Each structure stands twice: as C-alpha cells, then as structure tokens.
Length: 171
Image (cartoon, rainbow, N blue to C red; front, side, top):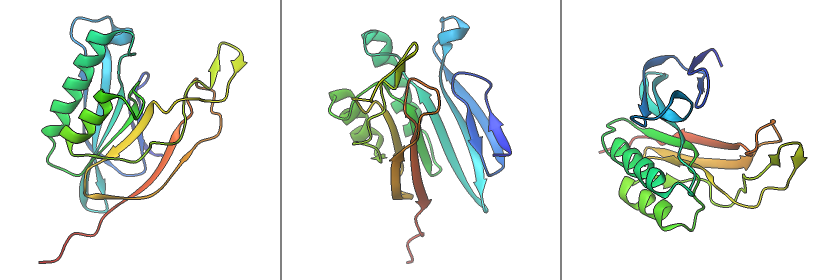
C-alpha cells in the first residue's frame, strides 16, 4: 500500500492516492487516548471515496463510549461522499448502541458473525468469542465477501472486507 496516514493508534493504508485526511480527537485527553478516529478521502479511479478508521472507547467507560458513538454518528451524517467506516467499535452486534448507530447513520453493516476478540492476553492465545470489530459502508457500496484474517499479533482478529462501489443507477 503506497499511501498511508497515521503513525500509531489508527492507521489507514491505501492503494489509491489520498486527497485529504483528518482525525477526530477526544478533547482534553492525553495523547495516548486522544485519537478516536482517522479519515481519508481517496481517489478510486476518478471517484472520491472516504475511509474512516475507528477505535472507540471500551464499554466499561460508558460516558466516554457514548460520547464516541455520538461523535462518530454526527461525523458520518456530515459525509457527502461514499463512505466506509471500519475498526474497533468495542460493541457486539446485539448492543442497542450498535443497532442505533447502524439505523441513524444509514450505513450497512458488513461484519456480524466473524468473532474478533480476544485473540490473546499477554502471551496467552485465545479463540475469539465476540465480534466487536466492524465494517460499515454507505449504500454506494456492495458487499462481496468478509472474512477473518489470520493471527497478525494483535489482541484483535482483523476483518477483511471485500467491498466494491456499486454501479450508479441509470435514469
């Protein structure tokens, strides 16, 4: 991937040129926990698309987690381009918060059944039991396939989502 944004926390890699980028921060927090989300606008063969990578607060910080979900929802609602949002939502598919995010944002959820956490704790390996990492996309995208990635050293299992821009409707 010749194009990227970010050095730690949330990093986005792209095969396509990055036109613009930004981040959503948690105001007033130290640097190690400040970054909530990073976004890029890329040029996919002449079509502008936005990719948003997220790492929302853990659910045992309920006030911060709710703030993150609200901030992300409001951000997604301002997007005008085709958008895909992916990362560690720290919410399982059956939580009211994730259902509400899905409904209010209007995004389609492309991962429900690939369990992603925990992959390890310290030096102990586990079989993941819950799906807290998700891939969402606006109606501009069609899902081709999703799968869990092999172990990559993280305590989360990555989700590989093969999605494509849907053909524009003809008048």
